[in-house]
Amino acid sequence: MNQLNRRDFLKSSTAMATLASFGLFGMDFKDREGPLKVALIGTGWYGKSDLFRLIQVADVEVVALCDVDQNLLKGAGELVSQRQKSKKVPELFEDYRELLKKHKCDLVLIGSPDHWHALQAIEALKSGAHIYLQKPISVDVIEGEAILAAARKYDRKVQIGTQRKSTPHLIDAKKQIIDTGKLGKISHAEVCCYFHMRANGNPPVEPVPDFFNYEMWTGPAPKRPYDGLPHIRWWRTFMEYGNGITGDMCVHMLDTVRWMLKLGWPTQITSTGGIYVQKEGKSNISDTQTAIFEYPELNVVWQHRTWGNAPDPEYPWSFKIYGEKGMLAGSTMQADYIPYDTKEEKIHFDCFFEREKYPEDLTEDRIELNAAPATRLHMQDWLASIEKDTLPIADVEQGHISTASCILANISMELGGRALRYDPKTMTVLNDPEATAKLRRPYRGPWIHPEPDKV
Image (cartoon, rainbow, N blue to C red):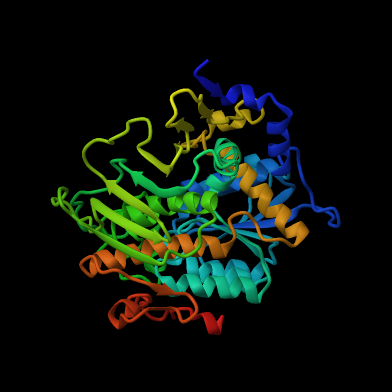
């Protein structure tokens, strides 16, 4: 037998104990009567997906939803009423501030575009809610510092949607390969994404439809001429609202490597890239980028291309950790341990699905079946952290480090590949006033940029 398959491992008591420790068998707030009151801000595809995973694993009542697209909002309300026990349609809001003012929520999920994360997260924390915040947590570094400061000030638990830490086959791989030292001394890691996911094109400017509040959607970000509904992934192709493929995809895999290897802030970050191939459309995010996140005697190297082929078709969006004795590759779909000694057995880890336990997954629009179990475990870990007053597995500080590292890579690229050394204590890039000035993006009035010492 050349490979040990994870399907066999899952039958063992060890695997079941691992899953149980993440709350697979249920968890409740023992000192509480009735369901937890929940709200969702941003009712797009992934916001609803996160909410539906929470409904599956916890006793909750979704009391309110918020979105600036009335069609999307109404549709989300109907779907939630079908999913939750009470069968009630949540109250619908266009402005998140009105929602938070009217409803005292236990939990708030935030699935809005990146440029809204900071203001909405901080306001939700001030309202007393624990929050589940999608990654990346911010569009600039100081926003992230402000969210972290608010979470600590108001003593709320913030789980970031970097759910690879709750992905069963990657938990197994970490325990069996990394934690046991099978790789030996680790001195290199690679993270990559070769998906052709960069939206590009030249849609015409058109009138804003009556059902969509474009002014509120734009909020603190620069307001582009309206050329179609931005929230159907179109916004991700503009740096005005996010941080490109690096901010969207590198944050997951860098965060995973940091978790597996217990890494904190990089000592130095360097990046180069740009729009090398796909020049024909409006998109202003890079189509090609390389970044180096440096640690003592270890580099984590990121590469993305939104064109061409993936060097390893089995791992087009993934991490690979190299040690002196072997290599561990991992993705959302699988993981493989490949020892350098040909006499030693390879170990393969399969993705874990829960189709039988949650058959409703099979009919959910656009669901990522491979990610659903991880998101459920992530939700349960978050709830357990609230109950036990501990930090969740994807605490906001770790989400901030991974997010800010990706943002700093983009700043380095913008500055011609300059090496940047960020100091979280002073919240500056050491000896680089020009880079430090880019840690805060200008806000469009009347919105005011949050500051860590004023949350």
